[in-house]
Image 1 (cartoon, each protein chain N blue to C red):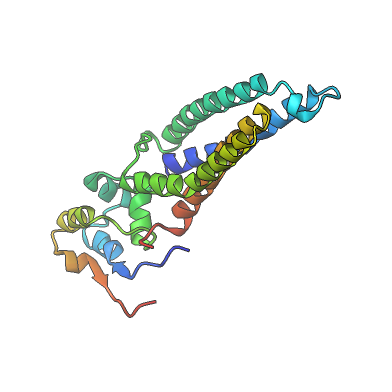
Image 2: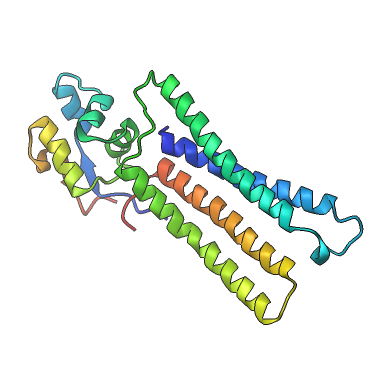
Length: 74
Length: 147
């Protein structure tokens, strides 16, 4: 079936570091639904490269600070 | 649950219910006639149109309920993930359309009654709707990644 993604992210931590930004706020800023932000945070959806850059830009950090890729992870 | 996911649940419910209604209408008017001689066109047309109308009305009701429940924050918009999941589901479901078309083609070769050709095609549409809805719901629940 669906392969689990090897891309992990620290969006939840970044949201809290950014004044406890809500999922709804982040969703509004990148133009998606709150459910999509939840799915990305939980690793159930891999965003497009453009959306990944948009998320990084919201937090004012680089892409590597939001997403990481570990090919050894199952 | 997003508006699009709720809408998918509505379609997953309407498709089998519509087919069951069709079967009930078909079998209750047989009156001892062989199945292949049944008057199937109007029951089939009626349930197809009924399913389309029910889908539209269901979408409107889901939109209103979602909007009220979220205090107007969820305006029923769909995003990139919804579109990808929709494409994924339609791709999976299309297998049944191909099988239905092939089945109808074989029946036509052997000059089978129109009843069977039409019903194989209708069944393929129903199975396509059910399978694509299930695939979409699994993608919403379990996730959508590369394959």
